[in-house]
Length: 223
Length: 243
Image 1 (cartoon, rainbow over the protein chains, first blue to last red):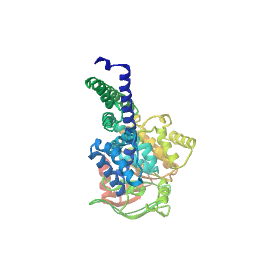
Image 2 (cartoon, one colour):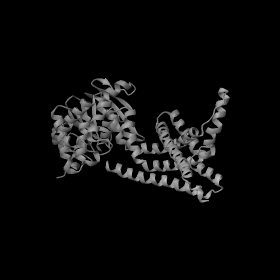
Image 3 (cartoon, chains in turn purple, yellow):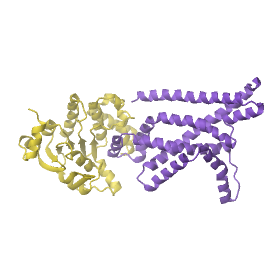
Image 4 (cartoon, rainbow over the protein chains, first blue to last red):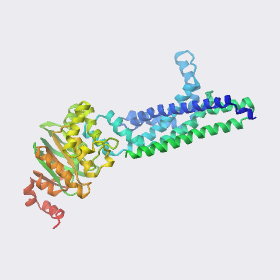
């Protein structure tokens, strides 16, 4: 039983942990871009954009993440085949990244929207009186202040993504949890790999919490 | 020159402005005074376009200000600087960056030009040594002087002040009023919503007294304060001056 703790096996799981972290990082970044776009849609005066923003958030918050992953992995290729007539080979990592990003984007839309609305009305009016255009105002004034306020929930979102990336094991992406399962199958011992996986997840999430607290303290200084 | 004709503005049921007509000539310093809720801030905000009037027309230098004519409206608004009661400096920018941003992005100046102009105006309001400070590190008076410099950097033809000293501690009011007085001396057209009667009397050239959304009295500053024509103005003045 103890021979499961070989350097090779640990490295194998570390690699899985690396994929989990990368997927979460990628998803939080792409989700952030989606979040900004749809948050601006939701706050827009344009009814169609409002509607688009609402639909997006409701769909991705209102259905299970696992269903979304399976839809992108198994459903989208069918749509593709029906339209083009040719088969598509879905890469589980890329599909996983897309599914996680869209899901996170929906949650981040709401976070960023509340952050933007939390910025003092006077900041908008100052931009207006100085003739600053909408894009510059968002980029230079509103979003930086909005993000500063929502760092804690954004970090929670990132930690959730690290854990939720385990769902991609269902479509055969070799992330941390799936690595543990592979080793479990090989050695007929699931306990040890699962504990190692748990320790690795915890190491990542605790480290991120700690880093974010430091970041918050540093940003508070510039206030 | 600003000309306001038959301006009406309501917030829901509340009629903030009722048929306001007013003319402000170049170089004038007009004080808008009156009890709170009289509509003086709303009038100032309508003139700059921060609020849209329900009806009525505003002319700037003889030309109609029409929001639907976007390009022109933007250019017209740029001719007016606006100073807020709560300063509204950009919290995530230093004083210098506050002054430079709009010069680069909306006036199309180069970084160097924007820097030079910013430092010139910051020096004029006595804030050059605080150029690299964030707003949170400044006193109220310093914030307001920085905000005035920021507005001046855009080279407006006139300046609108919305209760510029109302959020300040008493000992900081003078430093801001001094800056405004200095501006007036240099011939800047100013419209000032204020409760500083001393400023309105000594620095202002004309007083417009509003109550309940209507202009009750308009007069030269000295005449208004020494001998108000209307009963309501007399009543108001007797309340604000304690003796």
